[in-house]
Length: 129
Image (cartoon, rainbow, N blue to C red):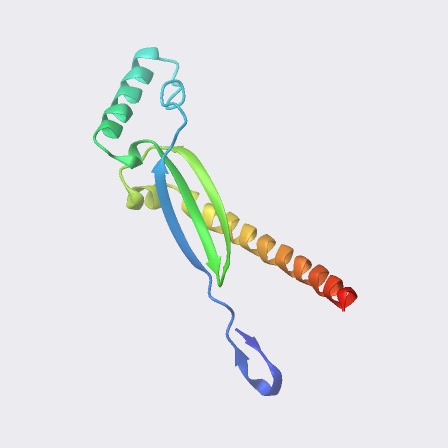
């Protein structure tokens, strides 16, 4: 929150975050694990493919984190994810927090680009009068 004129406080705009997931289209074979043990790699790949066959999108997921403010948004993506579920993805590492930061950065860039386009449009509009 910042202080506005006359000592009034102006609330900063709210940024909301959403996490979405879909099946990653990157092939599982050759990308899931590179342990150096071909049998272990194949076993891991087979387990992922079996989970996918059962409809478990988290077996091999493309995760998208979206930061939204008003009509603006920024996003970050991470593919080749293999987790039990959303809670597991968030708890197992700092990817989610990192992705939120990157999505927020992209949101701000989107807003700055809109301001620039607005300024350009205002100049052009004046010339058209």
